[in-house]
Length: 322
Image 1 (tube, rainbow, N blue to C red):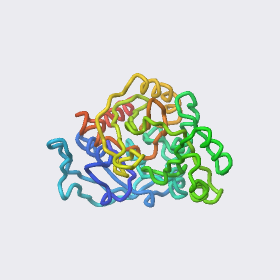
Image 2 (cartoon, rainbow, N blue to C red; image 1 turned 90 degrees about the horizontal axis):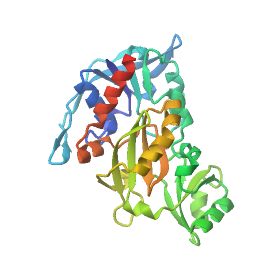
Image 3 (cartoon, rainbow, N blue to C red; image 1 turned 30 degrees about the horizontal axis):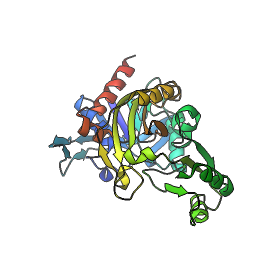
Protein backbone atom coordinates (compact mmCIF):
# COMPACT_ATOMS: atom_id res chain seq x y z
CA UNK A 1 0.00 0.00 0.00
CA UNK A 2 0.96 3.63 -0.46
CA UNK A 3 0.64 6.08 2.43
CA UNK A 4 0.92 9.86 2.05
CA UNK A 5 1.46 12.12 5.05
CA UNK A 6 0.72 15.84 4.80
CA UNK A 7 3.07 17.21 7.44
CA UNK A 8 5.06 20.24 8.45
CA UNK A 9 8.62 20.21 7.01
CA UNK A 10 10.11 16.85 7.95
CA UNK A 11 13.37 18.51 8.92
CA UNK A 12 11.52 20.27 11.75
CA UNK A 13 9.94 17.13 13.21
CA UNK A 14 11.27 15.51 16.38
CA UNK A 15 11.56 11.78 15.60
CA UNK A 16 11.66 10.91 19.29
CA UNK A 17 8.39 12.72 19.99
CA UNK A 18 6.31 13.35 16.87
CA UNK A 19 3.34 11.08 16.30
CA UNK A 20 3.58 11.64 12.53
CA UNK A 21 7.03 10.01 12.53
CA UNK A 22 5.72 7.08 14.60
CA UNK A 23 2.91 6.54 12.07
CA UNK A 24 5.31 6.73 9.12
CA UNK A 25 7.68 4.26 10.78
CA UNK A 26 4.80 1.87 11.41
CA UNK A 27 3.68 2.03 7.78
CA UNK A 28 7.23 1.37 6.56
CA UNK A 29 7.71 -1.52 9.03
CA UNK A 30 4.56 -3.17 7.68
CA UNK A 31 5.95 -3.04 4.15
CA UNK A 32 4.15 0.00 2.78
CA UNK A 33 5.46 2.94 0.76
CA UNK A 34 5.72 6.21 2.68
CA UNK A 35 5.38 9.55 0.91
CA UNK A 36 5.25 13.05 2.37
CA UNK A 37 4.03 16.43 1.22
CA UNK A 38 3.03 19.81 2.67
CA UNK A 39 -0.13 21.90 2.36
CA UNK A 40 1.56 24.38 0.04
CA UNK A 41 2.26 21.53 -2.41
CA UNK A 42 -1.43 20.64 -2.85
CA UNK A 43 -3.33 21.42 -6.07
CA UNK A 44 -6.52 20.56 -7.90
CA UNK A 45 -6.06 19.46 -11.52
CA UNK A 46 -8.95 18.19 -13.64
CA UNK A 47 -11.12 18.11 -10.52
CA UNK A 48 -8.67 15.83 -8.72
CA UNK A 49 -6.44 16.57 -5.74
CA UNK A 50 -2.75 16.40 -6.64
CA UNK A 51 0.43 16.93 -4.62
CA UNK A 52 4.16 17.10 -5.03
CA UNK A 53 4.98 13.91 -3.16
CA UNK A 54 8.38 12.82 -1.89
CA UNK A 55 9.13 9.16 -1.15
CA UNK A 56 10.74 8.82 2.27
CA UNK A 57 12.91 6.13 3.84
CA UNK A 58 13.14 6.20 7.64
CA UNK A 59 15.73 4.96 10.06
CA UNK A 60 13.36 3.94 12.88
CA UNK A 61 13.89 5.17 16.42
CA UNK A 62 14.83 2.49 18.94
CA UNK A 63 13.66 2.23 22.51
CA UNK A 64 16.77 1.91 24.68
CA UNK A 65 16.61 2.00 28.50
CA UNK A 66 13.24 3.71 28.44
CA UNK A 67 14.07 6.45 25.94
CA UNK A 68 13.87 6.84 22.18
CA UNK A 69 17.24 6.83 20.45
CA UNK A 70 17.34 8.16 16.90
CA UNK A 71 19.95 8.24 14.19
CA UNK A 72 21.43 11.63 13.30
CA UNK A 73 20.32 11.01 9.70
CA UNK A 74 16.93 9.50 10.49
CA UNK A 75 15.31 10.00 7.08
CA UNK A 76 16.22 10.20 3.40
CA UNK A 77 14.14 11.61 0.55
CA UNK A 78 14.11 10.45 -3.06
CA UNK A 79 12.98 12.24 -6.21
CA UNK A 80 9.68 14.07 -5.80
CA UNK A 81 6.78 13.40 -8.14
CA UNK A 82 3.66 15.45 -8.89
CA UNK A 83 0.85 12.93 -8.85
CA UNK A 84 -2.82 12.50 -7.89
CA UNK A 85 -3.43 11.78 -4.24
CA UNK A 86 -5.85 9.09 -5.38
CA UNK A 87 -2.72 7.10 -6.29
CA UNK A 88 -2.34 6.65 -2.54
CA UNK A 89 -4.28 4.14 -0.50
CA UNK A 90 -4.40 6.46 2.50
CA UNK A 91 -3.65 10.13 3.14
CA UNK A 92 -2.99 11.39 6.66
CA UNK A 93 -3.59 15.11 7.19
CA UNK A 94 -1.07 15.87 9.96
CA UNK A 95 -0.29 19.57 9.72
CA UNK A 96 -0.06 21.09 13.17
CA UNK A 97 -2.61 23.68 14.28
CA UNK A 98 -3.59 26.47 14.44
CA UNK A 99 -6.30 26.07 11.84
CA UNK A 100 -5.62 29.02 9.56
CA UNK A 101 -7.24 30.12 6.30
CA UNK A 102 -4.54 28.29 4.26
CA UNK A 103 -5.23 25.17 6.35
CA UNK A 104 -8.94 25.40 5.55
CA UNK A 105 -8.16 25.85 1.86
CA UNK A 106 -6.08 22.67 2.05
CA UNK A 107 -9.10 20.76 3.36
CA UNK A 108 -11.13 22.03 0.41
CA UNK A 109 -8.49 20.61 -1.93
CA UNK A 110 -8.63 17.28 -0.08
CA UNK A 111 -12.37 17.16 -0.80
CA UNK A 112 -11.31 16.32 -4.37
CA UNK A 113 -9.97 12.92 -3.33
CA UNK A 114 -12.42 10.16 -4.15
CA UNK A 115 -13.14 8.47 -0.78
CA UNK A 116 -13.96 5.23 -2.57
CA UNK A 117 -10.37 5.09 -3.78
CA UNK A 118 -8.39 6.69 -0.97
CA UNK A 119 -8.95 6.94 2.77
CA UNK A 120 -8.30 10.41 4.22
CA UNK A 121 -7.51 10.58 7.97
CA UNK A 122 -9.16 12.68 9.24
CA UNK A 123 -11.77 13.57 6.65
CA UNK A 124 -11.65 17.15 5.34
CA UNK A 125 -15.24 17.83 6.38
CA UNK A 126 -14.52 16.49 9.86
CA UNK A 127 -11.48 18.73 10.24
CA UNK A 128 -13.51 21.77 9.24
CA UNK A 129 -16.36 20.86 11.57
CA UNK A 130 -14.38 20.03 14.69
CA UNK A 131 -12.79 23.01 16.35
CA UNK A 132 -10.70 21.31 19.00
CA UNK A 133 -12.23 23.36 21.81
CA UNK A 134 -15.81 23.79 20.57
CA UNK A 135 -16.39 20.20 19.45
CA UNK A 136 -16.57 18.97 23.05
CA UNK A 137 -19.55 21.24 23.83
CA UNK A 138 -22.01 18.82 22.24
CA UNK A 139 -21.21 16.27 24.96
CA UNK A 140 -22.59 18.32 27.85
CA UNK A 141 -22.94 15.36 30.20
CA UNK A 142 -19.20 14.59 30.24
CA UNK A 143 -17.58 18.05 30.19
CA UNK A 144 -17.00 20.52 33.05
CA UNK A 145 -19.12 23.67 33.21
CA UNK A 146 -18.12 25.66 30.15
CA UNK A 147 -19.02 28.86 28.35
CA UNK A 148 -17.79 30.50 25.17
CA UNK A 149 -17.94 34.27 24.98
CA UNK A 150 -16.11 37.45 24.07
CA UNK A 151 -18.16 39.50 26.53
CA UNK A 152 -16.15 40.58 29.56
CA UNK A 153 -19.24 40.83 31.77
CA UNK A 154 -20.42 37.33 30.86
CA UNK A 155 -16.98 35.90 31.52
CA UNK A 156 -16.63 37.75 34.82
CA UNK A 157 -20.00 36.49 36.05
CA UNK A 158 -19.03 32.90 35.21
CA UNK A 159 -15.65 33.14 36.96
CA UNK A 160 -17.21 34.73 40.05
CA UNK A 161 -19.71 31.86 40.22
CA UNK A 162 -17.04 29.18 39.78
CA UNK A 163 -14.38 30.84 41.93
CA UNK A 164 -11.64 29.74 39.53
CA UNK A 165 -11.65 28.95 35.83
CA UNK A 166 -9.40 28.25 32.87
CA UNK A 167 -9.46 30.43 29.74
CA UNK A 168 -8.60 28.82 26.40
CA UNK A 169 -8.21 30.54 23.02
CA UNK A 170 -10.37 28.69 20.50
CA UNK A 171 -7.50 28.41 18.02
CA UNK A 172 -4.71 27.60 20.45
CA UNK A 173 -2.46 24.56 20.58
CA UNK A 174 -0.02 22.91 22.98
CA UNK A 175 -1.27 24.97 25.90
CA UNK A 176 -0.55 28.31 24.22
CA UNK A 177 -2.51 31.22 25.65
CA UNK A 178 -4.28 29.18 28.35
CA UNK A 179 -4.82 31.26 31.49
CA UNK A 180 -5.85 30.52 35.06
CA UNK A 181 -8.52 32.99 36.20
CA UNK A 182 -9.63 33.76 39.74
CA UNK A 183 -12.45 36.00 40.88
CA UNK A 184 -11.03 39.23 42.20
CA UNK A 185 -7.78 39.11 40.21
CA UNK A 186 -6.77 42.75 39.68
CA UNK A 187 -5.47 41.81 36.21
CA UNK A 188 -8.80 40.23 35.22
CA UNK A 189 -9.96 42.94 32.81
CA UNK A 190 -6.60 43.13 31.05
CA UNK A 191 -6.39 39.34 30.72
CA UNK A 192 -9.81 39.21 29.06
CA UNK A 193 -9.02 42.18 26.79
CA UNK A 194 -5.80 40.56 25.56
CA UNK A 195 -7.31 37.09 25.15
CA UNK A 196 -10.41 38.29 23.27
CA UNK A 197 -8.48 40.81 21.15
CA UNK A 198 -10.51 43.52 22.90
CA UNK A 199 -13.79 41.75 22.43
CA UNK A 200 -13.29 40.71 18.80
CA UNK A 201 -12.74 36.96 19.37
CA UNK A 202 -14.63 34.58 21.65
CA UNK A 203 -12.74 32.37 24.08
CA UNK A 204 -13.64 29.24 26.03
CA UNK A 205 -13.91 29.41 29.81
CA UNK A 206 -14.09 26.17 31.81
CA UNK A 207 -14.44 25.73 35.53
CA UNK A 208 -11.05 24.90 37.01
CA UNK A 209 -10.73 21.24 37.93
CA UNK A 210 -8.43 20.74 40.96
CA UNK A 211 -7.68 17.25 39.62
CA UNK A 212 -5.54 18.99 36.98
CA UNK A 213 -2.73 18.93 39.54
CA UNK A 214 -2.76 15.13 39.24
CA UNK A 215 -2.54 15.24 35.45
CA UNK A 216 -4.22 15.86 32.12
CA UNK A 217 -4.78 12.48 30.52
CA UNK A 218 -4.36 12.16 26.74
CA UNK A 219 -6.31 9.21 25.33
CA UNK A 220 -5.83 8.15 21.72
CA UNK A 221 -8.98 6.95 19.96
CA UNK A 222 -8.99 4.95 16.74
CA UNK A 223 -12.37 4.81 15.02
CA UNK A 224 -13.96 5.66 18.36
CA UNK A 225 -12.06 3.05 20.40
CA UNK A 226 -9.47 3.92 23.06
CA UNK A 227 -6.12 2.31 22.18
CA UNK A 228 -3.68 4.02 24.52
CA UNK A 229 -3.22 6.79 27.08
CA UNK A 230 -0.57 8.89 28.79
CA UNK A 231 -0.82 11.25 31.76
CA UNK A 232 0.70 14.74 31.51
CA UNK A 233 1.46 16.26 34.89
CA UNK A 234 2.22 19.94 35.57
CA UNK A 235 5.67 20.68 36.97
CA UNK A 236 6.93 23.47 39.18
CA UNK A 237 4.54 26.42 39.44
CA UNK A 238 3.00 25.70 36.00
CA UNK A 239 -0.71 24.76 36.10
CA UNK A 240 -0.73 23.39 32.53
CA UNK A 241 0.21 19.76 31.91
CA UNK A 242 0.95 20.07 28.18
CA UNK A 243 4.22 18.46 27.13
CA UNK A 244 5.08 21.54 25.09
CA UNK A 245 5.20 23.65 28.27
CA UNK A 246 7.20 21.17 30.32
CA UNK A 247 4.55 18.77 31.57
CA UNK A 248 5.94 15.50 32.92
CA UNK A 249 4.58 12.32 31.32
CA UNK A 250 3.66 9.22 33.28
CA UNK A 251 2.00 5.89 32.51
CA UNK A 252 -1.71 5.69 33.20
CA UNK A 253 -4.69 3.39 32.89
CA UNK A 254 -7.84 3.86 30.84
CA UNK A 255 -10.50 3.81 33.55
CA UNK A 256 -14.15 2.84 33.39
CA UNK A 257 -15.08 6.54 33.39
CA UNK A 258 -12.64 7.16 30.54
CA UNK A 259 -14.30 4.39 28.53
CA UNK A 260 -17.72 5.87 29.21
CA UNK A 261 -16.49 9.16 27.77
CA UNK A 262 -15.05 7.37 24.72
CA UNK A 263 -18.30 5.46 24.22
CA UNK A 264 -20.21 8.74 24.46
CA UNK A 265 -18.10 10.22 21.64
CA UNK A 266 -17.65 7.16 19.43
CA UNK A 267 -20.68 7.29 17.17
CA UNK A 268 -20.36 11.04 16.53
CA UNK A 269 -16.63 10.73 15.76
CA UNK A 270 -17.33 7.96 13.23
CA UNK A 271 -20.19 9.94 11.70
CA UNK A 272 -17.91 12.96 11.26
CA UNK A 273 -15.03 10.93 9.79
CA UNK A 274 -12.76 11.65 12.74
CA UNK A 275 -10.91 8.35 12.84
CA UNK A 276 -7.70 9.28 14.66
CA UNK A 277 -8.37 11.51 17.66
CA UNK A 278 -6.75 12.48 20.94
CA UNK A 279 -9.07 13.47 23.77
CA UNK A 280 -8.03 15.21 26.98
CA UNK A 281 -9.55 14.07 30.27
CA UNK A 282 -9.09 15.72 33.67
CA UNK A 283 -10.68 14.28 36.79
CA UNK A 284 -13.11 12.19 34.77
CA UNK A 285 -14.23 15.11 32.57
CA UNK A 286 -13.66 15.60 28.85
CA UNK A 287 -11.95 18.95 28.22
CA UNK A 288 -10.83 18.85 24.56
CA UNK A 289 -11.09 16.76 21.38
CA UNK A 290 -7.90 17.01 19.30
CA UNK A 291 -8.36 16.12 15.62
CA UNK A 292 -5.79 18.01 13.52
CA UNK A 293 -2.57 16.25 14.53
CA UNK A 294 -3.12 14.42 17.83
CA UNK A 295 0.13 13.58 19.57
CA UNK A 296 1.19 11.23 22.37
CA UNK A 297 2.02 7.99 20.55
CA UNK A 298 5.75 8.09 21.31
CA UNK A 299 5.10 8.64 25.00
CA UNK A 300 2.41 5.95 25.19
CA UNK A 301 4.63 3.43 23.41
CA UNK A 302 7.63 4.27 25.62
CA UNK A 303 5.76 4.06 28.91
CA UNK A 304 3.30 1.26 28.15
CA UNK A 305 5.40 -0.91 25.83
CA UNK A 306 2.80 -0.99 23.07
CA UNK A 307 2.86 0.13 19.45
CA UNK A 308 -0.04 2.46 18.83
CA UNK A 309 1.20 3.43 15.34
CA UNK A 310 1.14 -0.21 14.26
CA UNK A 311 -2.47 -0.51 15.43
CA UNK A 312 -3.42 2.54 13.36
CA UNK A 313 -1.78 1.27 10.17
CA UNK A 314 -3.24 -2.22 10.61
CA UNK A 315 -6.68 -0.63 10.97
CA UNK A 316 -6.16 1.21 7.68
CA UNK A 317 -5.14 -2.07 6.05
CA UNK A 318 -8.35 -3.74 7.23
CA UNK A 319 -10.51 -0.78 6.22
CA UNK A 320 -9.02 -0.73 2.73
CA UNK A 321 -9.73 -4.45 2.30
CA UNK A 322 -13.46 -3.95 2.92
